[in-house]
Length: 90
Image (cartoon, rainbow, N blue to C red; front, side):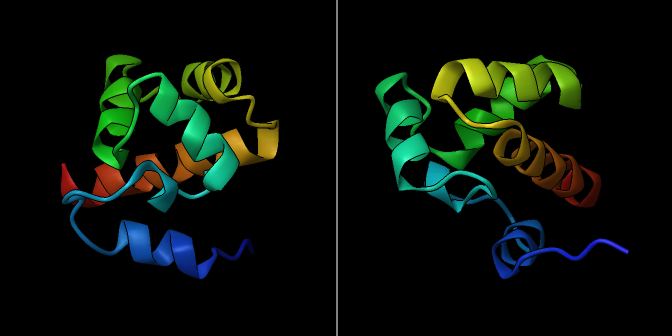
């Protein structure tokens, strides 16, 4: 059984609001800055990219790795977090 971090539970457990990109699971300060430089300054903007990619976790993971330099674990955690948020709120 996999466990989720407190950051994951906090993100999935409430509406998106105006959360910064660093609120996303797998996105820390360094990756957050790289995404902000490309215009992805809010979690909702990254969610928009996830939705544009039709909630395809594999495509999103590859995009995030290319866009921010995230490793596979970080990108996979972020994709899982967004998928669970979508399941709960959309």
